[in-house]
Image (cartoon, rainbow, N blue to C red; front, side, top):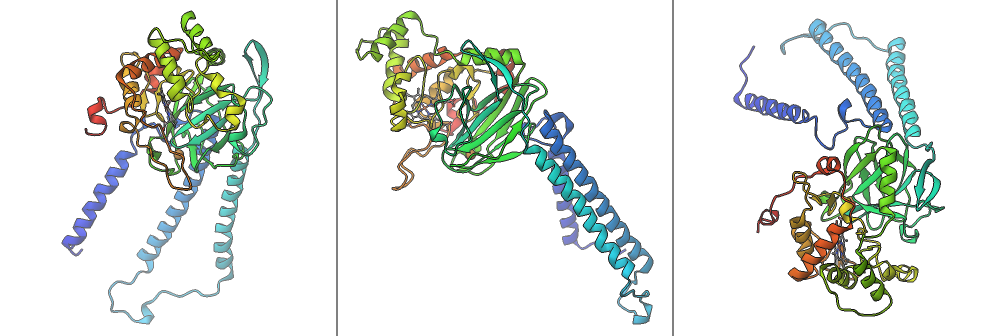
Length: 447
Ligand SMILES: [Cu+2]
């Protein structure tokens, strides 16, 4: 054997390091977003994709091993070394052997046909709907709900709409859908053991919805409803996801979670989401007065927050019990209010905000995360980059949450109001959904 030249040795060493890194990186079995490993498969759709992949991989391994074997066999048995050989030294050359020609045409064709048919079967099954109605009680009325969630991607967070009434969600534009019975941001709540149909669409650009442990990716295309897509979770738990189609500035901060609950817990969740903000009697009366057109002076923190919310936030955010009168059908139709911001009625019933990048509740102490919520209100850009200026002359809409230059008092009042919204999620969900954050405000942008 000749000695390796230094450059080859260097290349070999580099290759070894790269290979080892890749190998070790793939060992992160508890990574939030992975489709690999049985432990990460939490529903039938994900398992179907996994076993399909596994089969195709084994076929690929077999083909690889076969080709490698034949190559090495030919090299060992018929190889000629050195440059110094005559044509007579060559092994016997075969030409025009029909059997061989047919065999190596037919074998790959059959293999590909098999893989193709298997692909179509899985594809077809993933795209078919066979959900069963789920019995739920909505506002005191028992209904058989076709488990369906309208998923709306927008820059840069996911909205999940629940329409319990007779709404044709298959229509084309999300803007023309009626106000949903329940609207959540970043966190989709589903009952376990049920196939949930997702109607995926977008309000602005193309996004892609992906909860790896429950199913594959499906694009969210503006003006279009996706073909049926579904998820199902076997066990209660939290399943993480991420937008997987580059959609602009804060694409990487567009994450989401599915929270799967026992049917009874799911019903309780519906009940709580159908209520407005739990205001005390005086504050409720204060809202009534404002709705009636009076202008009473706010007397405490909650009332000040209500006043600020109606003046500065309600054009983008809906908060039932506080400002839904500003969201009349006419106002919605004339786009005086926008559906392009999270519904805040139950903000503190969720556990992450801003596209799943900050905790609403501290996963350790289980306390309301006043610091981060206040930072968001004071300066959203310090948490998540936005376009706070119109994108172009043709597109005057801004993206994300603007800095409203709120006073310290206004921020404090609003943080208290947001904490009040509730109901507080369970400790289990708070710790399971907890996301790592850069600790303090100073660290967020290196200020
Ligand atoms: Cu996106």
